[in-house]
Length: 332
View 1: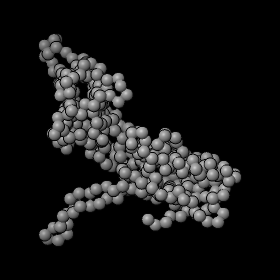
View 2: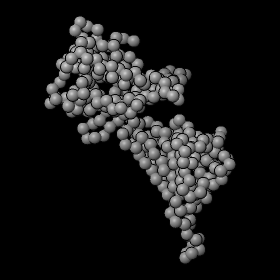
View 3: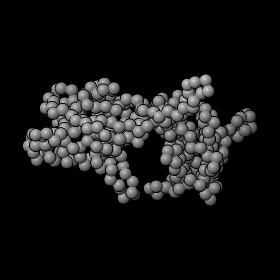
């Protein structure tokens, strides 16, 4: 890995870009502010010089479109045909300058920041590592975020005079998912209204089986993997993406529960795959066995318009489907 160095600079004045939390010009982004949220949930401003550190905007990189590995098939008449494009993890380079009024103040800030980033590599009680989150906020208040793991860079410059009351780092932050997630989720809600008798007062069609056909718009640049919440009553739930032809069904009887009663809820996550019956406990009850394996496909939403069918057999007043997803984007 090449050695990355950052220039020695003086702290900016509060009125200059990057000072006092004002937007700074970031490459491939434009004027924006930045925050880092560590695995404990602590938020660290990255463009507020009064915090004791600030971003060296000239050294920031890795905020553009994701890199792809292309799988191709050679063609008999020459050339090749693209068969598959696989997005690759991205590495973001984020230089910071840390300073203090004296050595002890600088050292405290240096150690705190180092721990905040390297904590992403420590395993928690569940044995898993928790990523940090880098968030870029535009002047209009919109934001995009990406999960990051510390890779390298918190070594300092190692030059004479550095490391006494100031020093600079060039963080290399590794991202499992190269796409940036929008700051605001997209919700979709469908609910069964009050049912009516077929012959009273006139022949009518009830919604006891089909909750609805709808068009779901994914405004992002990549497939998103939504979370579903189903509220009873319902005896069999079937979700179909008519655009891709993929579908999955959930039958409560397969786990010995029987039909969902009014108010009972099941949450289905599509990535990672998880089905939980909300029984009041913190994590709920594992209902993965209620899916119609091996035919079930916990499908995602393609960019653009998706024709979707929500079908709830045995539905009634209060039956509802809630769909929630965060659009994913190529760039910050």
